[in-house]
Length: 253
Image (tube, rainbow, N blue to C red):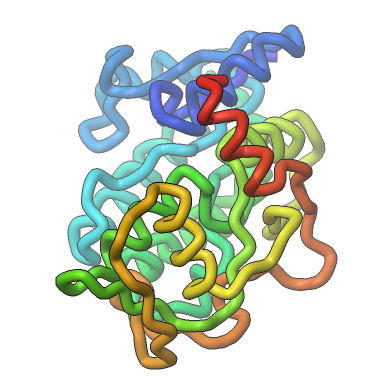
């Protein structure tokens, strides 16, 4: 099956293309680097011609609310129009989103992701939405974003991060399956307190910043409750633990 991976040159997209190719599918990496621009529509119809499935793992270049909303709404409308065209024949439209997107209305970025999901659900196309928890690869960014001077303010709420490899594997499993017309949640095998995880990140880097467990601390601008960042019961659980991922990445794997 021809599967077009929107954002196929990025962190998740490049891993997803490799997985699908290894399974015998014709995985097409579609991104501005390959001449496919979902914002302008350039190359989109051509890329989707003959595709049995489309999976969108692209991301907004900006986390700012209005910019993210413009990106996700414009790109998704262009993709949906091409996927619905008679010569496209797309039988499964999959998009990667975020666990907790609907629970974090203070975040403009999360509101933009919800808007993207709503467009897909209303399109009439067979679809599945994959909600993944935060990636191990972005934990350093969480700490840096919460830093004020030498102090890191993180809320002591639950978080259940996962490896990018496992995210790609979960998306691959969904896209080759039947459309769910619903959200599929995936998360890592371990839960942490966000502030404790922040300390672990700093300790691993021998970073001297201190972490304060601050119930009022915001997560990229959003207020978070105890379970805002973790999946519900019944989520698909990935296998890679944090220590295993750290060992693997430190060995250059």
